[in-house]
Image (cartoon, rainbow, N blue to C red; front, side, top):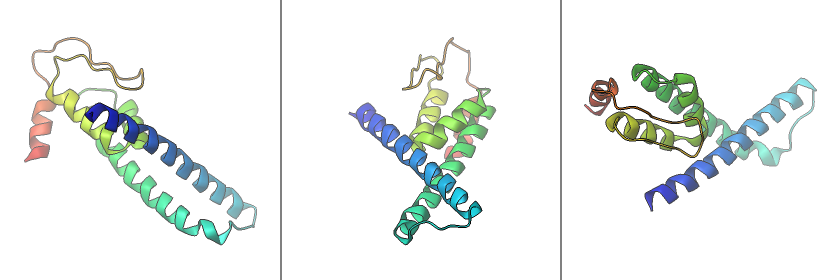
Length: 129
């Protein structure tokens, strides 16, 4: 059940963040050409900007956390930017269970091998406290 909800959130979030990015690019294009967007899009643009900022912050947090765990911080940051808080939860789950093999909805994320200890356990413990 949890995985189905996470998958639904990830798909919806990716579509909405991509749409918000498209609207922001359209707004920049329109401003550079000296025209304006319809006024009906102002609330959507405002909401999209807030969502983009929130997802950017989540992506930065994931990137720093992945870097502290000796993982590819660029991929984790971009992934979390698009999927949102679910990406942070997945990174935390990987960090707390280093012996498990994980496969996410993208082919980017694999955790192979069985390290003796996880360098993230200390980081996760500090975040929780």
